[in-house]
Image (cartoon, rainbow, N blue to C red; front, side, top):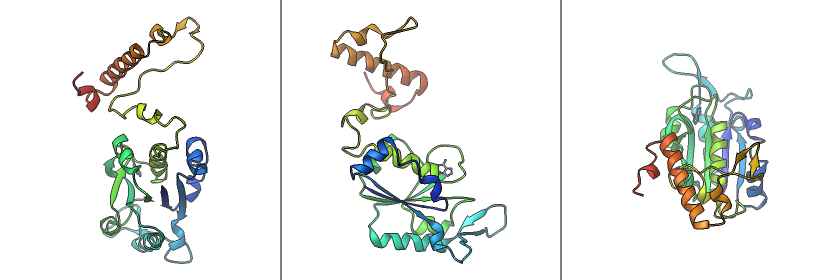
Length: 229
Ligand code: ADE
């Protein structure tokens, strides 16, 4: 998968993809992330990419021209399956959306700043608007990093154990069960006996029950919790 990210703050995205699973995805050639500084398409030599909003009011708006030129130039190199704008008024990101987006070949992510981007760009170029939660970040960069991480780890071959993403929280609309590692007894706090039993069928049943209970307590209403047992 190839992901281009358009931003006024490329420095913010230097580190997130250089470590751990994202690094492995890159090293294996499964995911390529390219960060493009929007100021490359600025309207003047001062690097201007934003302006006051029509109608008055505080806050700058990201201008049409730099965004349109950047999108058009980048689109010459690849055909995007999605051109995503990260914005708090977008569709709420979740695991299902990550699964769907992980099937794409090429994506362009656009990070907003200030009051956001000119509405005309949203109407004429953007194919999908995504929010990562009901709170406002100072820009779309961290949201873009969240998207790339959640999507990148789903690409076949990225995780060591190919099946492990299947057991993540949310993959079956349930939260993940509790996990334990050595020692068996830490300060008198013991690992549940069932996990030591070697009975894989019973362990799976226990994990499922724990998942269900956790989901009921913490996220009542997730579809997995409502499904017939
Ligand atoms: N940009 C600012 N806040 C955001 C959010 N919650 N999700 C996505 N992009 C954003």
